[in-house]
Image (cartoon, rainbow, N blue to C red; front, side, top):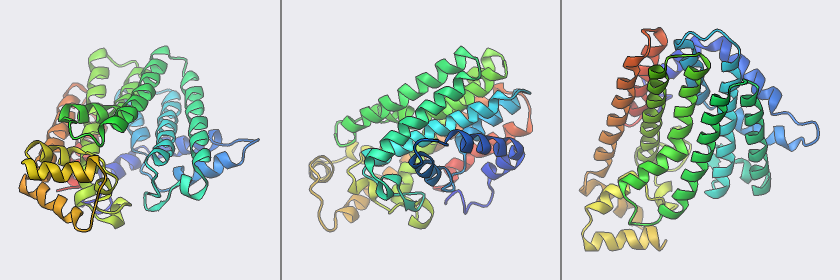
Length: 333
């Protein structure tokens, strides 16, 4: 089930609770994505920023700061920073993946070109660092700079591992921690840091973001095989067609006999895909119960996220974050 069609919507409750703050974040984002000299920058950025994304990562920063009693202004800066980093990585990812669609709309690299997407992504990374410096916190700068490096590292690791049948679940987890969870955990951690929260609470916020991000990415990989195009914004089986070795396939490969392994070698490693191969891939995933076992992993990470919140103050936002962890996995219930 998609986020938009689930019966309850914790991210919308969170957005409603943070509505005034989110409005200020959006205002700051629009102001900082402007360019006097290169009008293509706001054109490309607006295409993605205004595409209907749920602002989940900046909401996590605002929620963490709110839960820890922050009363200053810099949670707005940090939420905008997180969104700029996320948007920059999406622009770069679409070039690397040669994607033509995101959130059900044509990608920036398709509408403009690869050069524009890469350079505007670079511009947004620079804007993100300007924003985080304005908080005056070296610790915040360290956290977000490390997250940016980790994201890039995860993407490079994925380049070498995504089509290698020797890729293990541990390597997959390392990739996911880099390309997805690093920004989730940084988003929640800086909310605690800027609030002056106790160290055990800051650690708990990091752990929540880390586990939530891992669950989120596992579910995204599951949705590629179980989702609906109208709600995911991409076609079922795109990861298979793009030869991406995600967790469901890793689990199926681990239990494959020689004939099955030859199939995965031909389709994923060698890229020799033929009519009927996607159906065969589904059959093998079903034979080894790979999708259900992947979903169990996602549930496990969601539960880890919820457990970490026990260190945080009893607050209405804490309940929303607990519900959000369940909700992320409910997309494939």
